[in-house]
Image 1 (cartoon, rainbow, N blue to C red):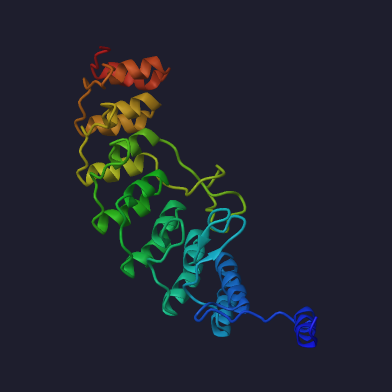
Image 2 (image 1 turned 135 degrees about the vertical axis):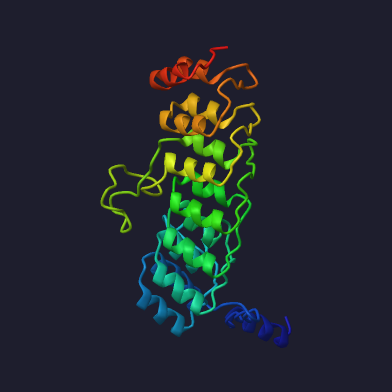
Amino acid sequence: MPVIALSIIAFLLTASPAKPSPVPGSPSATTRSLDAELVQVAAKGDTAAVEQLLQKGASVDAIVNTEGSVVYTGSRTTALIAAAKEGYVEVVKLLLKRGADIEKRGNGPSALSIAAEHGRADVVRLLLEKDAKLGDNCLFTAVEGHNAEIVKLFLAKGANIEARDSNDSTPLSVAAGLGNLVRCPSADDPHRRPNCNNNGGACCSGGPEVVQLLLNKGANVEARNNGGATPLLMAAYFGHVEVVKRLLAKGANIKAKDNKGNTALALALGYGHAEVAKLLRDRGAPIQ
């Protein structure tokens, strides 16, 4: 074999592989590490650490993969969304001051939506003051979180009180079905209120108060879902006596039937809600 050919082979065998050139505009490993740390400290409410990381070059709007329960396991999220979920108002203020995009999201809800979902009324108020956009389902999120204060905030901003979900239910119908339920944060939640006696939910307010708010704003008391159920039928089905009282006080049709021909009284009796059944009987409700 010619000497030149041997020399080329020897060179190829001993030479170190060339390092690939970085893609223009791509974040370095250091920057990615700072971005990931920023999301973590934002979720912990550490305002000073957030400021330090931003000064070191962390991107305020970086979307990063997260582990654990910062937002959702394995989700992609921002520092703003992480702080909003946990209810850290000062961190949210700082991130917005440093130019965070209030509408930016990863593969989950917006900052406003996740704050509402987790009952963070102070954060919701701040984001609305900064003109965060109301989503089509924002009122459902607040209703399902049993948070009367957030329902008030959304209604004041013009949320659609007659919006429809995938079951063709309105917020009032959903609230009537949830009825007396009141959920509270877990015992280790730093925002847990002292009167909470129930673990594992979004807040410590709501129940019939949410129904009353919607009624006071003129929600249609006879709106039907895709099963033909009105809010009264929903409340009777789930046995929420206080909600039934409030719906009847607003003139709900006590004789209404769903698509299967069930009246409110029939549903209350069929599902063993004796107190609701007695109330309906006393008001002259028919069983058929």
